[in-house]
Amino acid sequence: MVPVKRYKDLTPSELDAFFNRFGEDFSSIMINTVVPIVNDVKQNREEAVKRYTHKFDGVKLQSVTAAEKEINTGHKNTPKEVLAAFMEARRNIEDFHRRQLRDNSMYTKPDGTILGTTYQAIESAGIYVPGGKASYPSSVLMGVIPAQIAGAKNITVITPPNKEGKVPDVILAICKELGVTSILKSGGAQGIALAAYGSENIRKCEIIVGPGNIFVTAAKTYLFSMGIIQIDSMAGPSEILIISDEKSDPKWVAWDFLSQAEHEERALAVLVTTSRKLATEVNRHIKEDIDSGRGRHEIKKAALKNAAIILVDSIDEAIDFSNKYGPEHMEFMVDNPLEYVSRIRNVGSLFLGRYAPVAVGDYFSGTNHILPTGGAARFSSGTSVDTFMRRTTFQLLNEKSLQRAREQVKLMSKCEGFDDKHGGSVDVRFKK
Image (cartoon, rainbow, N blue to C red):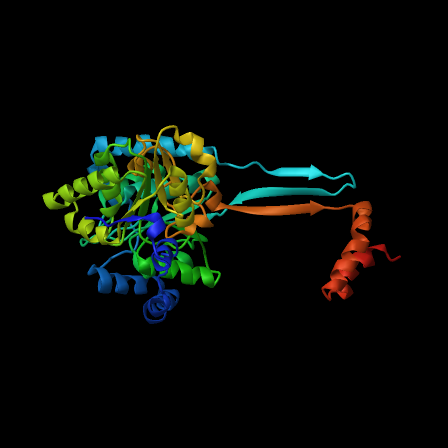
């Protein structure tokens, strides 16, 4: 069902496909679709968004924002037990993210120089919540909560409407519970562009976070490249890498594997194991599930074309593969997993042991599920309170401490060709 290969037998081209897998070429989409949409929205704001929402989603919006009545109705229509589950997850997410807050710092050197760092919130944040093939109310929690804890004063949730021009009730209900009243009913490049530029009804966002389709990612990237907004990262398909020894239940592993495959057709699932027997049994359970036709059958079936099972000789070899792969989610299903943590690098979010499926982190445990994909975990991190903070450094010098730096600054600035005014700006303070 899923191809099984030995790590040591993978060809250079196969390894390249694993380790350099993001590789989406935005050039055609940028030039032909995204840039014209962004420029149109910049010029015509909400009217352009209404036109594109009608063109792409078949929806005629009366207003691009959800009215207070809509939000209240969505809250009322959401089953109490569903809302209670999300609110319990909210408490876990808040507890985890509050621990990420940083204290300002300052210290004084012997020569009297005072140096320090202050942290301030980015005041206006946009949280993109995908729609289309599924609704993601959990992404409201994951984006809004760290922004609020950071201290963002203005938060806009950006999400595409359904065919009736409405936002799903549960998303509206969670927004109400979190105190978010600005909800932009538009997805795609047009929704990102309006949030980035602002309008009469939407405050301009200085940062936009959250995954979306290729048009959302391209629009975020384009607007970032022009210095209009900050973004979290370029988002690709959802992915899981599972490392397991022979002791794991193969059905548990198969279900975790398929939990990512059911996201979308481009989702990536990889199992790395020391046990050929486990690989065979996992494949059997995957085949049984696909043959049963249950759940998001066609999506899972398509996603499995991207999947792989890799055999290794040791857990150390499996960790080596993961460190080079840089997975969004990594499940580490072995005995005493904490003993290995210091050797595991380049993971968006790490799930340790046999009782930590990705789903518990996606929804409930408290960690964030807005994570780097496509290998970006090698150089970036998931959404956190830090995502919504700006860091400012400062220095205060007196005459004595500047005098101590005088000659070094003159020499260094002369080396770079700036001795006239760089070095001179120090010298002038000592010329009577």
